[in-house]
Length: 311
Image 1 (cartoon, rainbow, N blue to C red):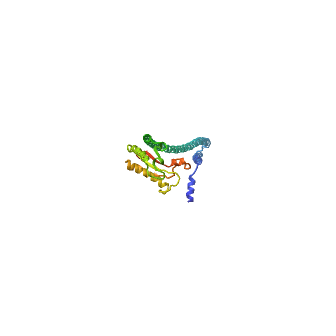
Image 2 (cartoon, rainbow, N blue to C red):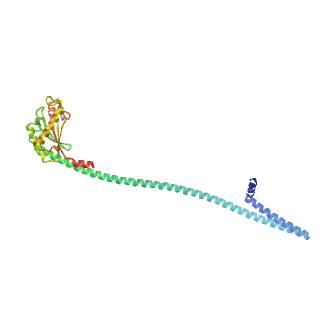
């Protein structure tokens, strides 16, 4: 291993050392030649001429040595400049390669951002189209709904007018016809329909119901809801409480309309509310009289509206 290292170190010489070896070899070569020439001249009795010739040879050797050294120095300078230029160019190439790599990375990032923005824009465009389509559908349904509500309102007003005209012969303290929330309310007071504490309809009440039934029979698309109401004074006698009395009065009117005047029972609903839905205060006799009433609520059928809402 040591000998191998020695041999390697031996051959690792600089350019300057090679130059010195070259010069020394030349000098040695010329010295050998001169030595042979001197011996020759001495041998041949040409001593004086040998001195002149020796001086001439030394001059030539010196001159050739100087020329060789100058060429070597120039070549060394050129080599150093070329090495320096090569190193500078290599550094510039490395810098340019780094810049190219950085620019390629930036371009890749920008391309990814562009792709993300394009994808997001595409998704938003799709959502916008979907939202516009949904909005158009909703607007269409709202228009249809508004048209149905307008029809219902017009139909309700038509029913109110017919009922008001038909029941115009009764006093306002006996019955009223009003319109509220798209419905027609025919409110009949207790004094028109029933004796106090009773659920049997009196003759004048049947007359009012007969007039009302005529309008219902020629308008089969009207639903009928009959509600019985009382005041807050507890009932005594036949009925257990005001719940029973209000419900009995509502069902009694249903029987008159269906049995006596042939109104279809599938159109009618009866319910009792006792004293819990007053229209006036129960603290006065006038208020209690207003609360003792039967309301016949007329509504246009909403089948078309329900179908639209279920879509």
